[in-house]
Each structure stands twice: as structure tokens, then as C-alpha cells.
Length: 426
Length: 159
Image 1 (cartoon, rainbow over the protein chains, first blue to last red):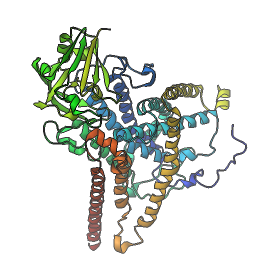
Image 2: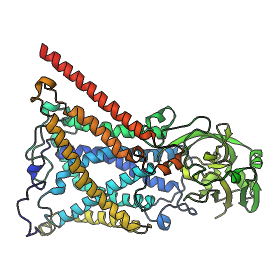
Image 3: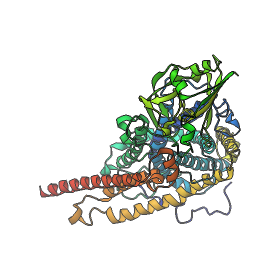
């Protein structure tokens, strides 16, 4: 199905093989970069789908996807509370691997750029379909990685809703990636068989030879003399990937490692027991001191309806646990929380084994101003309505007078400035 | 089978895999269209390809070419560089600080600073300083390595 209007010979410019002169490009380079990139993408994808599951999207208004998001692609199992660092781990991996993948992705795109201009542009129906899928692959990878990256920096230069676009674009991207991996596997195996998996890394600049030219591959027809060995090139990409990856690690692990978060957004902590990182300040959420002062009451509903003051809550049995707050943006912080068990509150409200609880915040805006927690989350001993942290009262930014802390739940489900809790049976 | 290959350009297995992939991709796109502003999502999808393939790639390739012409030739200025090409000692720290900028430019340039301050309680001003410091360290380390290489080359010539 060669188009009759296109000349047999490519026009001058990037469509000619002689245009591409880097001596480093070739099937081996593309294969090694692809092989390094793939595991990072797989981990990011799996942890991304798990993050959706962690919201217990089947409960109440928890789903952040349109129409409830309960398609075949959304897990609907009840998210566990053990180990308590589960979400810090999975979401930390999601952001770490996503950030670390970007330098490798850019290098991979560089290594295969001649393919964009291959001649003739369309050889057959199969070729047309494959190239259309590659457009989805390239567009999808850039879209998914960069929207995620800008989201963690709280910068939104677009008008679409981040979560569904990031989530469903990832499905488009992964569909194209699965096809790409399947179609390219033979070339990768051949490149590794011909050149060895790591053998080309042994060559210094003097011994860096181009991969042999073969029509239809990215190996150069007229290579320039090398100015960089493959190991220097891949080493630079590897250092970039490792460097930005470690910056992402620092804001998950915290403690002395938080200093690694040099350019990632959550590298700073303040002084004192309430100095750990905040997501949304009280001022930003319009929480007024008058609402949280002595007039504050927790509206509790579970058959009987109660209004409890902070003193009433402090008079109930208090429990202390070290638990992480783990944000979807890939940072976390473990603190020592003290407060009332959620199941004690359920019993106080007259419902011993509730199926869920609707928690509502005093905040008037924000997608997570109300959240539904599962029976499993309520039943866990460590699930608290926390009143104090690290031995002192919660600060206004950390949710004074009371906030939820649930092990392994995403941070936005640890509602701050709690105004009401309704325990319910299904 | 050979007739199929002649007409289609690949094996039937290829076609099945392509159809499966497009079906799932179409599902993803369909779900995006249920979100509040689907058209803009799709435009950004295409814009990402154009921005990378037709703007960023030619731009950094041109930079690399210019740097190569200016700094690569080890023989031309033997008197000053002793046969040690300075190119990679410029290129490597440039690539690393460039990648750091590309990844964290919103914080470095203070874009969306209001939202950042509302969320974290901190200002964004620190990130420009931190990035500049990173550039300083990378280029200084590279300069040091280059100086050492020059020194070694010079002492080698003296032998």
C-alpha cells in the first residue's frame, strides 16, 4: 500500500539515514534503555492502580473517578490496615519510580528518534497501525509522567481534572506499551544476543564502535566519530535517574533522609512536636478559630445522637500509636498520635459493629471534606480520632481540635478539623 | 497465510495484538471523555508529542552540535587542552542540571506558588537557590575533574 505520491528516495533531511550520525544509537542502546525503563513503569503502574484501591472507592463518595469509577479496571477490595506503612510504601514507590523513570524515558526517546522520520512513512496497514500505536505510546508516556510530576509540585497549567486524566491516560499508555513490548521483544533479544547485555559498557571512548548499520534499525549509516562512550552516556542518564529518585526517596522515608529531598516539594520540616509536613493549612481551608475553640462539638451519630466537647473526648480512654500520614503526592511522615479509638466512639454512639462511618470536616471546600471509612478501618485498634500528637495538642494546621488517623489509609482519608461522624450499618 | 501477510504487512498474530491494544486504549480514551473537559486532555496528549519531538529534541540536538563543534576537537588546541577534550566536562553537568530543571521547574520558577504555600505552609523561594547551588556543585566538580585530567596529561607529556 505504498502511496504513489511519495518518492522512493527520501527527501533531504531527517528522512535520510545519513542524517542521523550519532555513533551511539542502535538496537542495543534502545534495548538497554527500554529494559531499564520497563520495571520502573511496571512498579509505577501497579502502585498507581493500588492507590485507587486504597481510597475504598466503593464506599460513599470516596471515588475520585467519574461515574464512581467502578469499571473493570478499579479494584474494589477492602483496603487493609496492616502493615500501617502500606500506603506510604506503595505510593512512595509510585512517585519515586515515576520520577526516576523520566530521565530514562527522555534518553529512550532520543535513542529511537530516527524512527519518527523513517522512509517510506507508511509501508503497509500493519506499519500504519504500529505507528499510530507508537503515537499513543509517546504521547501517553509524556502525558502520564509529566502530569504526575506537576501534580506533586501542585502546579496545574491545564483545565482538565488531574486524577481521571492521569488514571485513564495511563491505561491508554499501558495498552500501547504492552503492544510495543510484545512487538519489540524479538529485537531486544537479538540485540542482547549479538552484543551481550552489558558488554558494550566495557568499551571506553577509544573502543566505542557504532552498531553495524542495518536498514530499518536506528544504527547509523554514516556515524560521526564518538565523543562519548556508551557507558558515559548511560552513566549520566543513570546518575540523573538515581539523583532525582533519591530526592523522591527523601520525602517518603523522612527522618535524617528528608534532607535528600533537595528539589522535591516536601523536604522541609519545622521545629517542635507539630513541625512535621502539613497538607493544606487551616488558613487555606478557611478554618476559623471561632469554629475550633471552646464552642466546638463533635456531632456523633450511630443511632443515638451526641454532641461531644473536646473535654468529653479527652475523658474517654486515650491510646497512643506511631503511625504514618502518607500523601498521594508521595511524601509521608510518621508521628506519635494520641486519641480515642474509632470503635470506642462507635460504641459510645450506640452502634457496636458499624459497617462504615461518614466523617465530615469543618472545611467547606476540597474533594475530601467528607470521607467514608470501612468496617475494617473502624475495627483496627490503631484507628484514632486523634486529639494530640507527640505529647501536645494538635496544631491548627494539623487538624485541631480533632483529626482522623487510620493505619495504611491515604493521607486525605485522615480527615482534619472533624465536625461530625456518622456510624452506619449497610 | 502468505496472502494475508502480503495484504496486511505482518502476521495475523500482529493484527490480533494491535486490535487488543487499541481496544483497551479506546476504553481509556472513552473514560477520559466522561471527565469534565475531555477535549483539553486530548489536546495536551498531542501537544506533548509535538513539544518533545518537534521542539525539545531539535533544540537540545542543536545545542549539542554547537557544543561539539566548539569543544570536541582534541587536536586543534593541543597547547591549551593537552589532548583532553573538554566537551564531556561541559556536557555532563549541563545535562544533569538541565534534567533537574526540567523536572522541578514549577518549584524553581515559583509557578503555582500560591497553591504550594496554601498546601505546605512554606514559600517556594528556596527552590531557585537550591537548583542554582546544585548547578554550582555539578559544574565545580566537573571543572575539578577536568583540571585533574589536564594535570595528569601534562605530567604524562613531561615523562
